[in-house]
Amino acid sequence: MTDPIVRSMTVEDRAAVMELLADSDPWKRLGYQASDWDNYFTPLPQRHDSYVVDQNGKAAGIAVVRQKFLLGDYLELLGVADWARGKGLGGRLLAHVEVAVFARAKNLFACVSDFNDQARHFYKKQGYQEIGPMPNLLIPGSSEILLRKTVGPARKS
Image (tube, rainbow, N blue to C red; front, side, top):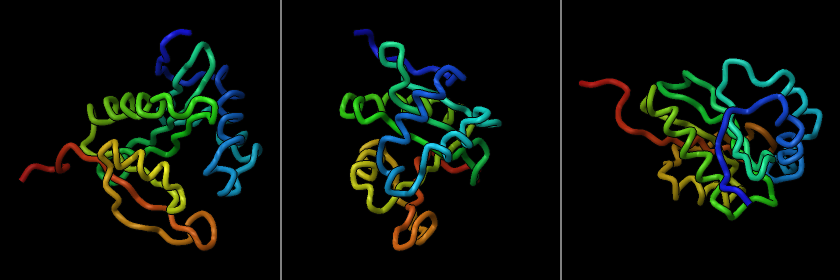
């Protein structure tokens, strides 16, 4: 077994990434289906930074970052395969994203579903602050919570 590496996503990763997302929560609970992921990744997201964490030649996690969002960047998607959870791969992937983002911006934003306690704990442990809920954004009766991690104000006084 080799150490996992974080690298840019390629077209060859597409099937494994779509499979890991289609088979896991919170995506299933939010109603995402294989066709949604096929549309999202065909072609690969444009004007985004897309990374995978590679475990033994297979994509075990995905991160997609949209640049230039609210005086920072937005982590549009972060997912780790069920079989790869609990091994530190999500933290490794997020740390890689943060290095890239904080080299060009002061803020990184993300959203997490209010019912996703595991993800909320993960982001809090990584230094993210919950900014506030956006009720009924994706599904009725649930909120997406905006998160922010910062390395300082966007402007100097």
